[in-house]
Image 1 (spheres, rainbow, N blue to C red):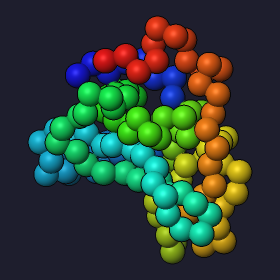
Image 2 (image 1 turned 90 degrees about the horizontal axis):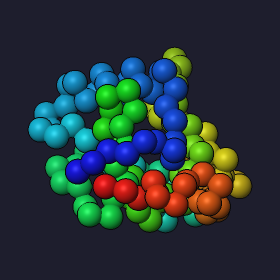
Image 3 (image 1 turned 60 degrees about the vertical axis):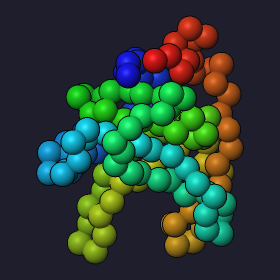
Length: 131
């Protein structure tokens, strides 16, 4: 698997720090996290994060500051330009996706409405989905 230059999403320093911490403590051999979106909730979609053992041929593989992330191919156009952050407060903590493709969110924050981004604005033809 080849990890390509990342033009898809960015991580805040807080997200990098927390991802490195959970990956260090992970019992998983590969220490790879897969990001995606799924149909869910009243606003239509929610973000997914899972540990994986195997990368599929069509997955987009990126590396940011030593963190290996795999993007589900069905999620790529929904995640372009997204900044992933980690926020912690007295009552709540978790990853937050600051996504320019988000048009709405439900009141409880469990799901969002996303539109596909124009990939030609963000990717060069010869670096898109290269492995």
